[in-house]
Every structure is written in structure tokens, then in C-alpha cells.
Length: 230
Ligand SMILES: [Zn+2]
Image 1: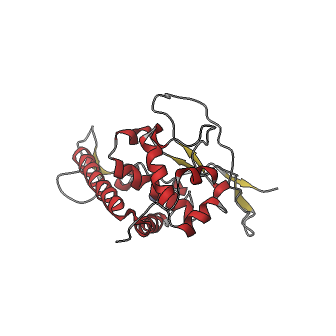
Image 2: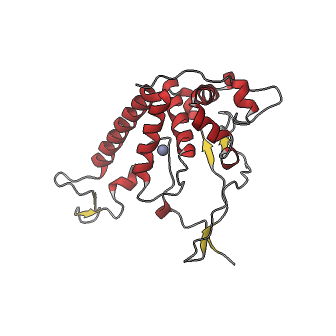
Image 3: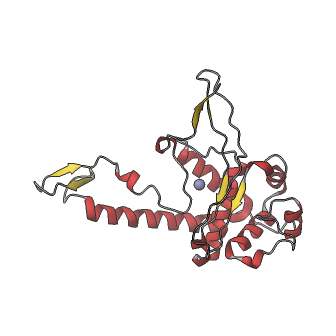
């Protein structure tokens, strides 16, 4: 198992402009559990990937770590990704912001889970993964998992992964209890009028898609940001 050790100080991370929010008083990892995990991950990422983050990737992502007491607000995210046009279709995605969102819910999670989630999201950035994915989703998840193990977060990654699987199967069980027939594998719903069971028009997987804090937007759920170039 790859060991991790602290390779740099939090002040170095702050000076490299990787710390979320900056602040004139310097970085404060104690301001939340999420910030503490961000500090731990950024201080321990091996040098090569850290350099990649602080040089070529610095302007390609932003943090969004809202305070748990903020109940709602309008928040500006400036575009940092400007996709190239497809030479054949002459289509391109609109410019968009790549944002690592860390939910206030994480303040109540076990610390090693928070660390795993922070490391996992940063791994997606380092690996240059697509935000809007189709068939590549599972591959990208596996690559992110493998990379954080290489960084020394294997214990946390496995615990997080096991938790996701447990939650996924729990949710599937709950969905099935509500929706499934007595026999057969196909997901069905009860037709109220005839008591006949009909196939669901949404596959079960869709119902449990948002199984975790790590939500990647799937391309087939989006009809937004495609534009025709001039
Ligand atoms: Zn992921």
C-alpha cells in the first residue's frame, strides 16, 4: 500500500493559489471539516501531480465549499473551460466552469470519508476527465479510485467505496420494495386501476443514479450547453 506523507506546508499550497478562497489572513484548515480534508490532500499529493495542478490546471477549476448556514444565494462561477469546436459537426460546448463542490453535509461525515471524497474529486481534475460523460463514467471512476490509492489514500478510498456500495444496494432494495413485483427481475410499477404490473419507463439504474455525493452529470441528461458556432 502506498504510504502518504506531508510533502509541503499549507502555506505553500496557499501561495500556489490552490487553497479554496485564498483570504488575506492566510489559509485556515480549521474553518471546516472540508477545508481540513482539502489541506490534508493538497499537502500530500505527490510532487508530479501537484505541479500539474498548480501549473497547467490552476485556471481550470474552482472550489465551491459553501458554509452550512448559507441557505441560498446567487453565486457567480466564471467560465474556465472553453471547449474546442468539433471540426466535422462545427458544434462546440458553451464555455463552462469546472467546479469542485463539497457539500455542507460532509461536516457530519466521518473525516476519512471527507478526505476520500476530496481526493477523488481532485483526481478527476488531475486526470483531465470529462464532466459530461456517457459510457466513460465507470472507467473514469475506476481511474480516480486507482489514482488516489497511488497517492496514499487507499484506506480512505476503500472505506468510501464500500460505503457507496452499501448505500447503493440499500437504495436499490428500497426502490425494489416500492416498485418491484413479487417475481421477475424487471423493474415494474403497479398500475393502480388494473393492478397489472407494467415495465417502468425509467430503468432502475436511473432511479438510483444519484447515489453519492460524487455526482457526475451524464451527457444524456443534458440538453443545455451545446451551441452551433458562427
Ligand atoms: Zn467520481
